[in-house]
Length: 152
Image (cartoon, rainbow, N blue to C red; front, side, top):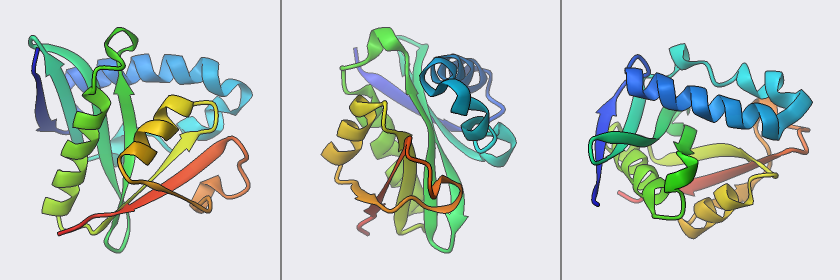
């Protein structure tokens, strides 16, 4: 089935539900570090959200958060476990990049965990390059930070 995308904000009920599932997954994956990472993922700081739907059912999400200058951070990327491996995350990521470009940003950055090789592979496949950890992730060995220049 085709995937449809909806641009919305962090108050959308489907986003709240998906992020709760994401956080439950990350709580296990991050272990003792979860509280550190969770403090940087508060929804009140996120104004631009994309939801992915299949058969009118929410299957994934992603968000943009202004970083600094013309750089925006990709946040809260998630696809329900039973829907993974079908290109949904790539579709969400491309939607976020297009929206970031439309908003005037020329670069995206993101942080993902070293224990998430599927996510790292997705970003590399989509032309993201590993960069030194930035901001709050400096010195965090469990973090991998990446960047992509957005072509106009």
